[in-house]
Image 1 (spheres, rainbow, N blue to C red):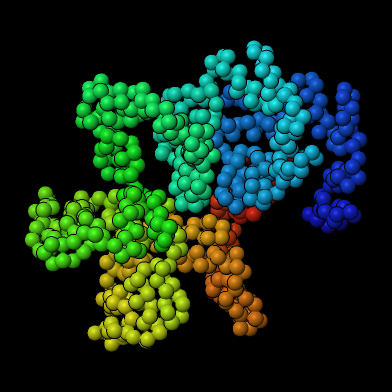
Image 2: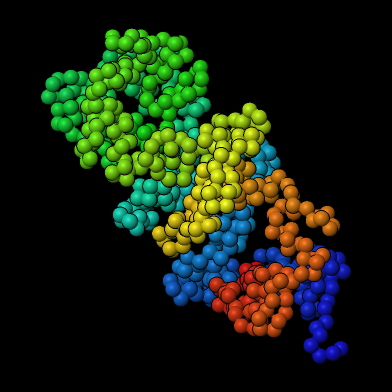
Length: 621
């Protein structure tokens, strides 16, 4: 055998290859089920001697591997490696589907079952399935009634060990979970997690109907009843139902007539304590509830909630005729659109209106009255709403907030248009081809495709365009003008849309969502390409061999197989390649660059695939 050639040993059952015969012998135990190494204490068997050695430490209590940070001891070196990640925060095992990282490979394996939906562990009593065996074991306690974990202080029993550990803190007063922001301590990690949302403002629970977010799951459960109409709490006196238990308790006071809460200033009585608290503010003038978006203050929390709908766009009052929604109970006025009722008449011109507020605004046409003045520039307006919008020019305030992507707008109408990016709503339809659009002006421009109309002409080269914006962009090809500048990195662009796409690199904003898997992207074109993964669409065809591709650039690379074109050349050795990525990897042979580093042992690699193979040495049990 020539020097440098290694003999390979093949498994005749599965075909796997090994470099050493003893490794092959160990591997074959997988197929035979042979376990030749026995524990002389408990009789358990193992296929490898090393596994038996580790197992015996359970009986001897030997823990010869120590963490040099906290001093904790372990029976295996791999356990120390895993434990150290608590101190370092290292999470080398990453889910390639959602990007979440884990400190242990086993935890990643369990996590992946969330995406696959696989539940391999089945209860033989009720047939319910679970993703993990330990969850199945705990579940079975429901059927058996077994509670093997008992509190030695009060005697209370639990079916799960962790529930006992949590319970014991009632007796010890231990609160081991600390908030690093305010220093408050808690007996349960889950309570700490919920508490932290006060500081972060995180709202992790989303309503899948309207998209609204909440910081606690129980608040989400109550909120969902708005959509479902569920009212599980029933009054046993009149039969009326409610979505929340607290609302039922307050309602029952209407039957008893009880009003136990009295105002000591004016003597007025209330059936609910918080109504008395709110009432007292009439006397004190106190307004303790503030809008965290615009800073406006209110005497009652309910008024803040109503006010916030201006910013959030929430509209909980629905018309059962047309389905339109409202942020306040202005439903009665809206219904007059359907009935045609106009009970409010102008005594000057006789015109009628469905709302008294609309009549008041109309009268100012006759009187010329403009009672709303801008205190910054002095300009006057006939309506308060117009003044409010005008002031945003001076303040730069953008009070209308998109609750999906956190973007802000100065006008509610702009927010309405923006939201259609997320919802996919396209209410403006072309009657020629049936194509729909989210904005009316986009439909007008689209129709010119059918009519061939190109009313916008370039006075330099004579070229015509269907939209004025396309003409303006085109003219910059003559002038070289790039008026859209990134204020972060200074790069300039000839078109606003190019700048907006570029800005997503800095902001990380990804407002375009795949309606199939929920993945987000910074521009609409990338979403279109991504969706082909789900649809299997391959619109780009090779005219030589007929093969199809989902992306144009992949087709270009493929064609080089037929043409033999290799446009990427190494400037060191002159070797050519069909792809730039392959050239980049090749260049590392000359430079010696090894950009991929093992986070466990520090070894460097020139290729990512080599690093992935290497990591398995550490993770292998």
